[in-house]
Amino acid sequence: RRRPGLLTTVIVAGVAGGLAGLAAHLTLTDSREAIPPPVVVSAPRSTSAPQEEIAGGTVARVAEAVLPSVVRINRATSDRFDGSGNGSGVVYRADGMIVTNNHVVQAPGGIEVVFADGRALPAEIVGQDSVNDLAVIRVDRDDLAPIPIGDGASPRVGDLAIALGSPFGLDATVTVGVVSALGRGVHAGSEVGGGTIYLPEVVQTDAPINPGNSGGALVDANGRLIGINSAILTSGQAANAGVGFAIPVDTVVDVADELIAVGRVRHPLLGVSGGPVTPQGANRLGVEAGAWIHEVSPGTPAAGADLAPDDVIVQVDDERIGSMEELSIAIRDHDVGDRVTISYVRRGQRRAVDVVLGERSVDESQ
Image (tube, rainbow, N blue to C red):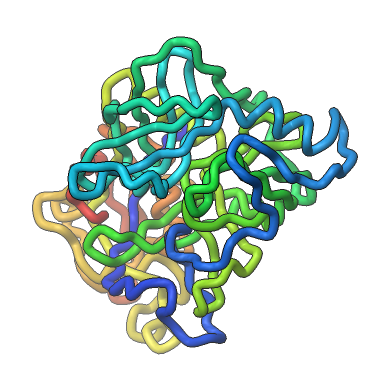
């Protein structure tokens, strides 16, 4: 069974806010770090989406149907709510279960949910998954309208994509674009201790996504959820560059169901960190491509299998590995306790070892 968890690559990098980086350098950041407002903005509980004709109705009809399932999430500041909004969320179940990004709710303090009907209620955290940047929160309300979930068919590049959320605390905002790409893996800036997290196989869209859209819905032309908005790409000026990313709906459903059932998601762990094989390192390592190990964490399955720095992992079972990201995805496809065969190159010699995958703890970074 395809697992939503993943092995992440350790990257030591400070997150210096939306202005970090050169103007010509594209930097992936948390969507809250963008500055300019979206192109299409509406007043609370209204929609100003263009009347673009689409299969199954207009954008306005989709917005009217879906907006009751999208909420604003506020975090308490100095023991009070300032009402400005920290992010968005999506009603997952009628009994009060709401899905959002983990980075929206991870900071200490109370949580308040504001619904489309204007009602505000306190919420509690049901479970968090920092690896996939997803969380489930719960409110004491049982008359909610769950968002329609896609039927499992993947969206196509070029399909209409409608983003709904509360950028800058502006409730019921609708922006429109298309699905720009599928299956792309991206490194998203983390505000916890700096560094990044790796989000695999995201849905890329040009629908404007800005601060406060995080955790909101990305839906198709029929109003079905295709992803949870999570990150944007900026051009070094903290501006929306027309490239946003959403966690795909299949991952959202898998993670949300597990968080609701047991309060956490179990992620398999190998226990290595590193990067790609560089042209300079290829001759010394004796291999041109693979996941180049820089560090092996003590007490992990990788350490028990005698994997070492400068080993290059080139295959997991029958799947070829060309980068650390591909290794992340390969490990993600397994469960905790699975036995896998790791093929690697050490000083030009190919070797193989069987490894039983462990379980990643909350504070482990690989």
